[in-house]
Length: 264
Image 1 (cartoon, rainbow, N blue to C red):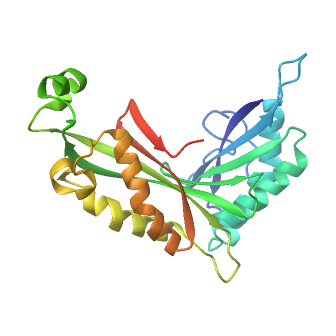
Image 2 (cartoon, rainbow, N blue to C red):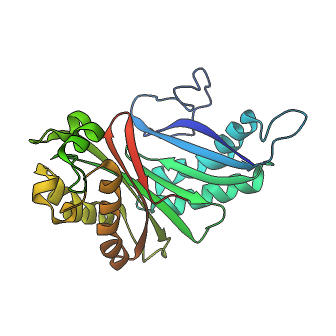
C-alpha cells in the first residue's frame, strides 16, 4: 500500500466576483493572486495499491481538477460570505465533496491556512479533525548522563557535552485531535491551543537552561527525543481538560534534526 500526496495552491481574491479561471502558473497557485487576497494550500492524500500496469494510484491531474472544481469553491464561498465559520467545518465539507467525486481512495485533506497552522480531516475519523500549530522557544542544554563517566559522556555527546551547555532556537509543532462541535458550539479552537501551549511550554521553556531550570529534566538527558516526550506529557492533561486530545508533538532542534512523539 502507498500514500500519494498532491499539493494544490490557490488564492481567494478579496474583490467581488467569481474565481478567476487563469492557469498560467499552477506551481505558484491557481486561481492566482489578483491584487489583494488570501493564499492557501490544500494537501490531498490518496492511499491504496498502485495499478500494476500504469504504476498509478491516482492521476495527479484528476486530483488537481477534483479539488479545484469541488473543494476550492466551497472554501471561496466560506471565506467571502461566512468568515466566522470554523475552518474545520469548511474543510469537512470540501473533503466530502472531493472524496465522493474522485475515483481514487481519498485518505485525508489538509488545509494550510498559514505557514504554521494546518487543519486536517481523515477518512477513517470523520467525526474529528486534527489541528497543528507551530511555536518557538530558545533554550540551552547540556547532553550529559549521570550514568556515564566523564570520558564516556565526552565520547558519546562530543561538543554537546560542554559543561557550560549550548543553545538552540527550537521549533515546536503540536497536533491535537478534536470534535467538530456544533454551529453554536465551535468546540476546541486555535486560540485554545495557542493559550495552552504558551502557558504550559513556551513560557516555561523559553530562555532557560533545561538541565538547571526545569525539574522535568532532573536526571534526564535533555535530548531532542526527551524534549519531545516531556512536552507531549505536559500537554496531555490541559488539552484534554479543554476538550481535545493531543495527537503528537514534533520538536526541531535544528533545521535538519527533529523528533516526533508519539508515532505508530
